[in-house]
Length: 427
Ligand code: ACO
Image 1 (cartoon, rainbow, N blue to C red):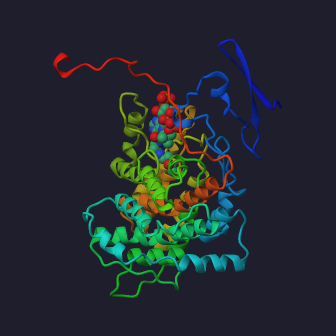
Image 2: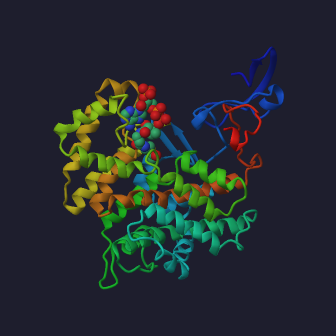
């Protein structure tokens, strides 16, 4: 294997080191390219660019592999808990029973919000999208913890990380409660992270809320499946915002804004809406034809991925979890049959086969979340809640990376060259 790459540009040769990770493609270190040649690289959407080093998450998109700190997502989803995965992502190793207990206690003790934030909610319209509310409220946390957050102090960074992970369920549940006009519920420290979130979302002060163990387990697993995913758009946004030394709460608010888009976290909402629009399996061919039509902007939501060119391993777990939730709640939903049939038809269609378009994590998640009782508008908020773990872990990793610099991409300029100002009378 070569350890340098040669480039010949305008008759000048230059050499660049080739760096190897523990697994995955090598990367050509082009940091000196501009100095050596005066040229930039052009890579819209970063399809061939590694923006950082990271030891958190590894994806092999061709093989459909997803590892967190080396552990396969399927094993974590089956055998661990969201709190364990959060600890793993933040600290690098699985916790001992004692370490996990202490971590859970720390998170539990940070779940309450400053009372002033309840007033903040009341400034939103009742029909505001929960992601708009989450973006605003998480951004507002920076006003509450600005002076106390020195990002160069590891201890203070960890406290900010714990606060974010702990408060996110409270923030998301309050966004839901506000939208349905019900009173906010305070966290209950006797419950698990996920059980507490379910109670704050679906409970009411007037009666006792019993957490359904199967729903709690499924919800916890959904959180695990969304915890981190390498340098995706929202994580890159958090890193870019954080690269300037910005307040961590503000950086996570930026991540939430990015996640909201339908090409990213908003796809689970869009996928379920699409399944409802399709309605019955006999209408699938019509929608498949639309997805294939170049002149129609319609895409099969929950299908395709920038990195996975194989079945998204999270979609496999998600499909299994749908059945478990249906069995536990003794419900069924015709939309699941439509989804299964749509998957089967698409995976046998040459368009989807040739372009390697497979179901992604969002394809089945909406079916489960709606069986649990969440409105579609909450789907992306749940994604944000879980992904906060990955965002803060990646943010911490970035701050401690000695190679870290403020993110400042360059461009290929295509506008007018310098010209003289034209006075209004001559235009
Ligand atoms: N339906 C129909 N055609 C598709 C779809 C789809 N869902 N996804 C990709 N294609 C086609 C594109 O039209 C393109 O065709 P072309 O080569 O003839 O131009 C080709 O497949 C490659 O697609 P790109 O858009 O170039 O792939 P990219 O990596 O940029 O996009 C993305 C990935 C955004 C996820 C895309 O597949 C998509 O829009 N999917 C639907 C939305 C979705 O499910 N997003 C969730 C992603 S997972 C997550 O965020 C958790």
